Picture (cartoon, rainbow, N blue to C red):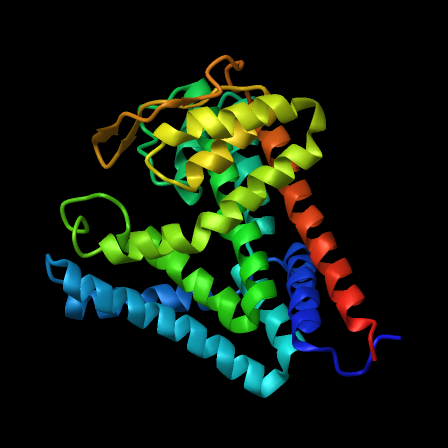
Length: 313
């Protein structure tokens, strides 16, 4: 029988699994989202402490991490391990929002409304949309779906299972800081270094779990997935996004990657699964479906692990 009071590992695993369910059912809060509030807080802190040096950036990254972990610890003290882990995972996961935004761009592309597709793209990624054509827009969305499967689905679930509410919110804090200051620009080259490296560290395991899950879900493409992850992802500037994008490219049988423009600066990225077909609007729907399946697979495994661990008392 499962006891009334679950041991910590079981409570964390079940809480993480429940977090994905709640995100899919409830979505984002209609008014105030805690992640948005955290972003505003860190933007205000940046205005006060920014210097063109690594040292202040290290302090900034650690302050953001401390806020996330501290909020999770407080939630655990107030609500207990299970409820706090579930609530934190719900806040940190954004699977429903990712699906909604990606499918909105797909719908615009199906209507041949490139202006609308370009207008909606910044909700998914930071590349310059103005010069992107039909295929490039499809590719950008598919890459964003793959990367955000790590950042907004697998990462929060894994860290919630490993560290409870503190793990989930700490991970989300690190990922948010990377999005804010971790990109390569003259302003953040030094100041954002620590946030970017911390995000690389936090996302290392989730990216590889994502690739493994993709292989499990698309067994007929397993050989291509393994080759793309082992060979093509190496040249990607991100040690984590490249792994997920390569796995998605091979699983979907399409070509992803290639040169992209951020803030007017050309980033010469490698092609991932270069023998694949060009992306089309239908590829976006397939990428979204694969992302959803990865999330549900992981949530199901965590739920089973939590129930199995809890069947002791």
